[in-house]
Image (cartoon, rainbow, N blue to C red; front, top):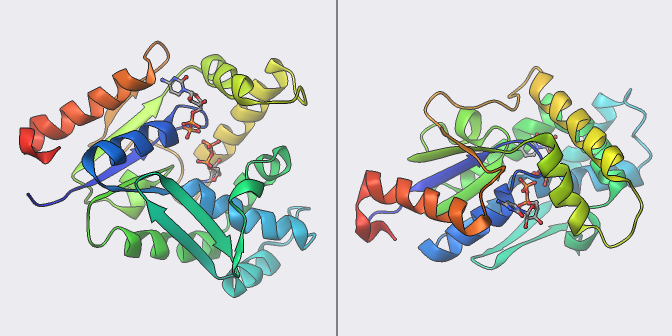
Length: 226
Ligand code: CDP
Ligand code: CDP
């Protein structure tokens, strides 16, 4: 059975990475979390003290010098920068705060997009992000735009936090700020591809969304695809 690529885009906290990982597991595919790549670059931008928003050229120069390595497997993804495994350090509030600023920079995007396209060239990839269906893999055989209400997405993220560093309202405002920056940026903004299927997961469970996507694949490519 020939393999396909599946693109999953949508705003923060919609369930993209959870669902993409499970779909990849069911299909024996590789899951690629492109947000982790922008987060890893952002971590290094923070360490270099380049977060005041006025340093796009210095950030681009730094990004060119970084060597990102992804270790991909159906169980998940680990990410290293210049040989250091940073998987555990890229989900902090500080990275959340700066990542959309870094992700607006054209040179950063073109570096990462090229890497993402190489990873998907052999097919059999489930990739999640913001611009996968519109820009990174416009030929992906199945495209999903996964969303949920901002409140629900904030609640989900709130339940994941192990310390009370933010209130639910603050978290919702942070998510909405990031969505706005991602949707309003000039290059490859967050938006639904014309040929993507919209799934609103506000009142759907994770298994329901996974089943929905598997059904989409089977409806298009036959039962034997999974
Ligand atoms: O997990 P969450 O949805 O909060 O974010 P993420 O997928 O890890 O992405 C973090 C940030 O990276 C997003 O808010 C975007 O600014 C940026 N990003 C992007 O611009 N393009 C992508 N393909 C993936 C992420
Ligand atoms: O990758 P993205 O930012 O879109 O979201 P995620 O990190 O996969 O999901 C955010 C949280 O929502 C996780 O804790 C998921 O387990 C949870 N979730 C949920 O409870 N119900 C869903 N239908 C989807 C996600």
